Length: 100
Image (cartoon, rainbow, N blue to C red):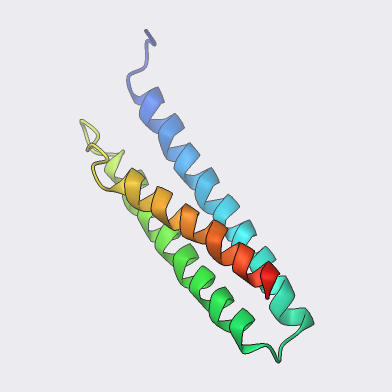
């Protein structure tokens, strides 16, 4: 067992931050097909939904990181499943952007 009880919460907080940053990279990569073919409406819609999902992921990650600063850290009841569903939606929408 670690000698610093706050280290686990700090590592988890940093992991949430890294995940939000990687979601930003995915969202920016989703913009690429729209930039190359700006006339395709379906790509615009899918990319817009990806951007909304990205904003939701960042909000969830921020809320979870803030919850980890309290003593004792609040449990993640709905945060992890919500984050997983948004990540799944990212995969589906990303595939849709590529397919269009």
